[in-house]
Length: 208
Image (tube, rainbow, N blue to C red):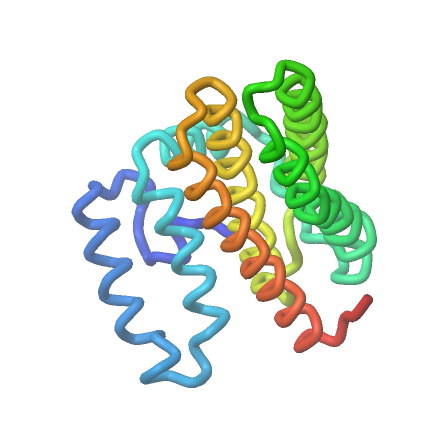
């Protein structure tokens, strides 16, 4: 896995202000609008800043870096990561995205019916279990640098799915339409990120 501090050209004791300044400076240099070759670099910068720019994620990252005395294993070959990580994760993502509309239509028939709500809660529980499997698989191996764009799309897809399922859970507690609307927007973003992952995969020579 890439060193986020090295990506931003920083030491591990850099302040939050230094992290932000380094990110902004490098983004200007590598933005695809001004540097057509900077797309992959931008992906790495965004991933690094997403971790180091958030105090909680940075603390967890630092702990992982310091608690292991063994060198990081080399990233797997792209074909291996594709087969053992991307494909099983994508299958689970597709399962979640593909069943939501049918379940929401069933619930819309009568959201205040106890049987309908019980069935919907079972669906949510199954989706959360499927998502946990996908997240564990995604974390099981570092992505090869050649598939950084694929991993980035998949990472953001999983995050959006997590938030979407959380909003559906809150809907079952409050019956607020706002949670349904925000969850639908998050599902849509998850689908868009999945498409971006596939687009990057095809550019790297991978297909279904």
